[in-house]
Image (cartoon, rainbow, N blue to C red):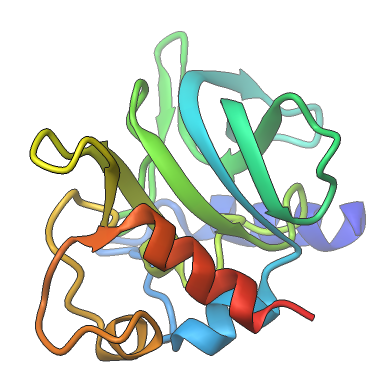
Length: 181
């Protein structure tokens, strides 16, 4: 697996000088998000630590705490996702279109291939959802990766919503659990 990541890293480093280098992700349905994820969890992004890799290039480890694991190692007390890119010293490596986690935000993450891919989230930002408190209900609501109402038709169908809307966390989690084996 390390060879796969090293090969991908070398390829992206070689291409990093190419103008307009960008990352895009294949569209995913809700079913694909759940089925393709190695791990699904709710956690708060608490740190982003960029580092130089021994193999070359820069990676950033994003740490999540306050976990609730729905799929994968449910004994974990913290999860670190390794993503290609970051800044160390005066050196910066960034791919346009690469989603970013914001420190202090709680996310639902559909993770796949951590440590072996350039961005270990199924479908890029399609597999990351923000969780925010709802002052009216006293509960929490789920939004897309940018904190906007969910508009993905497949996700809305899975949670039985007709129009773009924030989704109650309990409803979203039940849709995930309904899809798990």
